[in-house]
Length: 105
Image (cartoon, rainbow, N blue to C red; front, side, top):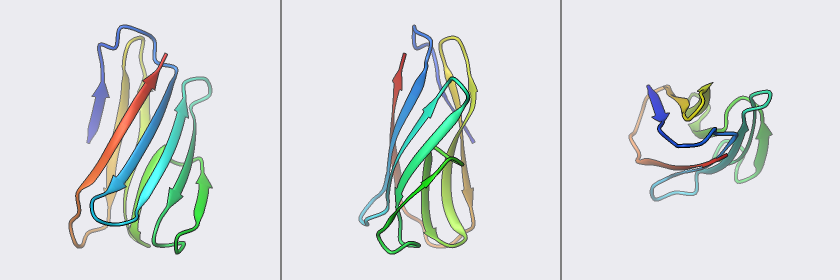
């Protein structure tokens, strides 16, 4: 589904995302910027056994295994809002995914 960060009162230029899963070590730090729609992700997940990977596909991602993951992408940059798409692939056991997104103007 979509998440709208709206009525900001300023033109959003960049996002910083901290994402984690309750009660385990899955975490990611992501950045997205308005000019060129670039995204960078530093992700510590169980797939790579505690190592960190850099990707430009998402600015938020948590992988539970090879086919189960949650992603955050920027759908659109508006004059005083940002629309983010949250998607989940796969199924299996449930977990509480928490994220904080900081918007910079």
